[in-house]
Image (cartoon, rainbow, N blue to C red; front, side):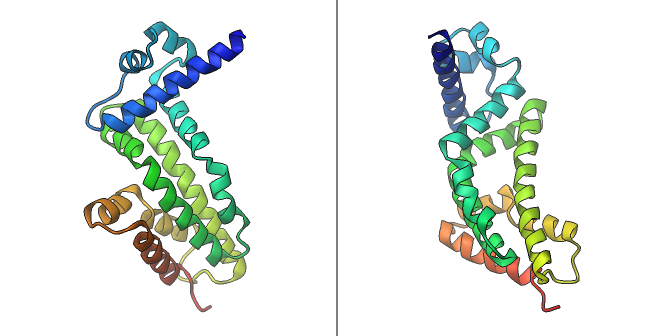
Length: 197
């Protein structure tokens, strides 16, 4: 019973953290704010999370669990060719950013004055780079990676195309639909990376 209460309290704290990050996109979210939103004491928050970096990282993991991230990644993981992996990963990333962008935006706004936010954001974006690397490696294994690129350079280019800033400029600022983003970025990625070798 004690373990069940502990898990419910943890989930309450993480949900409060998520909601605050979604709402408060111009200033840092601290432990006291989260404790108040969750209806618990600061001491209770610290019993579950030793510092803000740990709490922010746990919040992103909590979101990923709610969004069934591993299930959503399966089409990209199971795609049999590099070209199909690129298409599937871009589709996954577009769907994911559509739901997690408010939290990532909050972390991006916080990162310059908040080392914990910067570290958590960096880890999340490097995870996205891993997905780009998998797709590029598959393309290279197929023999279709343009010879102008090394695998590392091609990974960097694909990662750049999928940056949160680029998504924001195209979808938020320019008003692209999610499907336009998927279609155009997929076309640009394939046109750039696939060569007739």
